[in-house]
Image 1 (cartoon, rainbow, N blue to C red):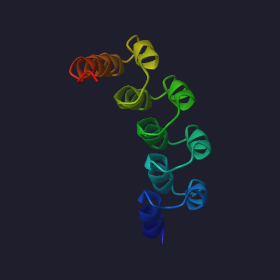
Image 2 (image 1 turned 180 degrees about the vertical axis):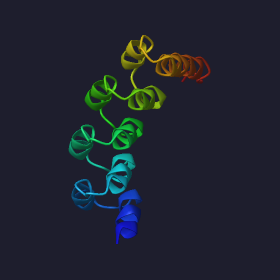
Image 3 (image 1 turned 120 degrees about the horizontal axis):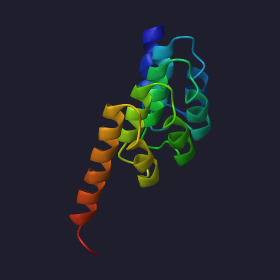
Image 4 (image 1 turned 45 degrees about the vertical axis):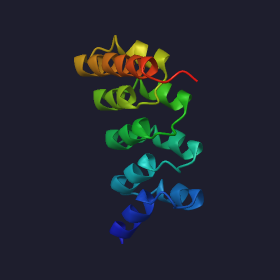
Length: 129
């Protein structure tokens, strides 16, 4: 049955009410899929940002619709992998990326610098309207 819940949690058409129920599953793999789903409500992502499993928090950090407040919180996570996810998220605001450039973990700091540079290049090559 766990496989079915995993698939449902991964489906971008799964209603928010169902995702909310799956977010409390005992299986962290299901919660991880809920955290990655771009249709998971922000209140659920907020709850999952405190999950005891780092891979659930990582998927929250990588979620394309995660809020500024959650990204800011996760940028201070104890797990470097979660902070790396924040730096890797293309929608992470510049001020959070800038703070991650001074991260104690060199991989996180380098990823933050790379993300800032990629954003600058993208802005330079965007057509003026």
